[in-house]
Length: 469
Ligand code: SF4
Ligand code: SF4
Image 1 (tube, rainbow, N blue to C red):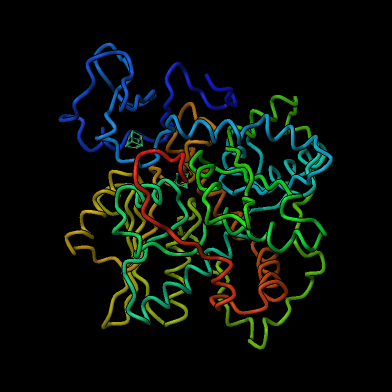
Image 2 (cartoon, protein in one colour; image 1 turned 90 degrees about the horizontal axis):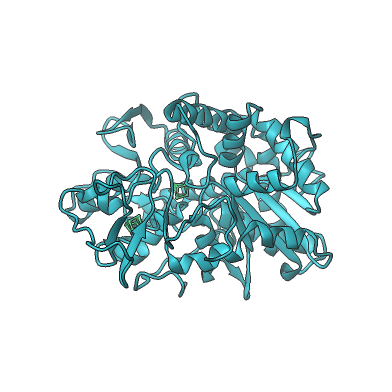
């Protein structure tokens, strides 16, 4: 068996399903799915070791033929194990000890929220403690990935506005979830024109670190080893996309999940509650005053973290919340508050000027995603924007988060609140983003230069394997 990080539990099968997910095939058709009759995994079968799927009476793992598999990326398949081996705690440790490279770590808010909940330490405190520990163990810099989220959300708003203005494909659907993107590229390529072209926060952070900040610190992109700490394994797959490389160098070299980070902390015998604290690094230390964004009054830019409202769901980044508030403010549209749809993983809201409506939705989990895909195919989708996330309950419930033994719903609610509270402290983040556009992009958000740096492209990918990505 491959030498995995032990945070990822793989037994004698080569496929693993994230704890937050049931196989979408089983979800969709538990009754009609043909299960394999033998106990041995045969060629062409994906064998799933699941905590949550009730299988045959004797509780054996369920087998699904590759014909049935939708390639939703909900589980880790044989080809993906290669990636997991390369992006592991061992590789991370080796790089921390390598004097010839500068290890730069970017930490997602969902990771901070998960650790905060498990350890009962505030989110901001967790961030400062991790910064201190990582630097003590050799990291050159530790960043809050919220900087990149802010840019992703703003560019997402501007792309949506442009699509409406130019009559481009609607509904626009968020592009930040690699599980969803993998599903579209492999199984529903006709949906590619609907997907936002904006890179995910992880993708944008990689661009900032490797294409811009590297020259500030007189280092080549190859001389930096960029590690992102994220809530799911699928982000490892995203990091090796050829579209997210600078030359032949990945903009994010290694993704570790929250669980893998926790495992590393255990390995080095760190007790978080007893460690010192240090602030995150920032790209610009002279950001005391906002500079004017080019010739434009920067007050006209609706920075996402200045728009977060009390009741906004932001556990997956807040794509719907920020876009709805942005459109409401920029176009003086009244907002009908978010309400639950047919189940807890669908939420909808509407903007209204008395004549026209703009409809927004959050769709989480593959069962709901398949309903959305069907509606689009039938021309019955009335949404203009959809925040689509593969995990039920979104990113706070990602498959790489720390396990929650009891009270899962309450824990997810607490994590959602933590992410929300952290987003409300965004003025420092706004300053950093302002300077990124002013000094590095040297143009406005949504401009050609900005689009060339912060967007990516999708393409149809044939076959079930991700080895050829
Ligand atoms: S990739 Fe998705 S559909 Fe295929 S076996 Fe895994 S969870 Fe099921
Ligand atoms: S919903 Fe979030 S955590 Fe889950 S696969 Fe997508 S990006 Fe990862």
